[in-house]
Length: 224
Ligand SMILES: N[C@@H](CCC(=O)N[C@@H](CS)C(=O)NCC(=O)O)C(=O)O
Image 1 (cartoon, rainbow, N blue to C red):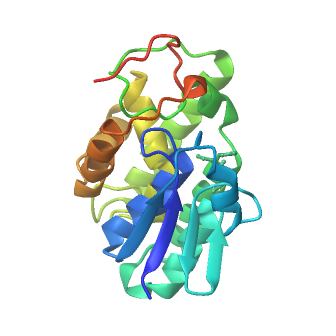
Image 2 (tube, rainbow, N blue to C red):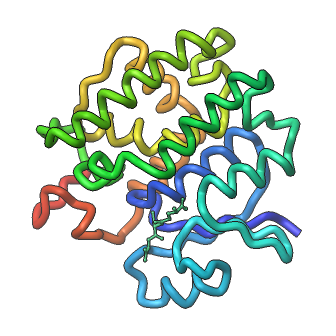
């Protein structure tokens, strides 16, 4: 039976984007079920698979996995050839640490800059807490690229779960015109050039659902 990933809107659902892009880049076949976060039946449909009532959820026969990072761990175990974590132990520990840091943190940035893939690039002046998050992420990306990135354009060279965890942050930096240093900017360019990125983006741009709380220009909705 095919794997199924239950996700929210491609335009807005940053947590959904993480396992989705990892599965696409890894070449894992799966069905997807997209449920708009504001659909009336969102909670009952998602709660059939996850007690949190949140997306994403991965369904693999009788196995149901929620929480984006747990889904990535499940995929890494089930598809070892995809090498979703770096092979080197030190690099793998680092990748897990920055992935956990993302999963647990950066709330000011997430609140100030909701993922919104159809918003045209337009600079936003950040508050001090969000700017501190940006500085930390820029330093982290630059450090990963210089220490572990020699084998490719991603944080640990080849694409890993850590890149999946930061994919929505790349999108936010891009959308809100956040300036990033040279290495971080090159990393963003590599991420946004992934065919999987383009596939997600073109589906996002066609979605009809508008969520006021994620539109920072509300009541104006800027769409490319
Ligand atoms: N920690 C969770 C966060 C999941 C989450 O907050 N998902 C949002 C969509 S991006 C959601 O389902 N929101 C709907 C709701 O809270 O009712 C994860 O990593 O998967």
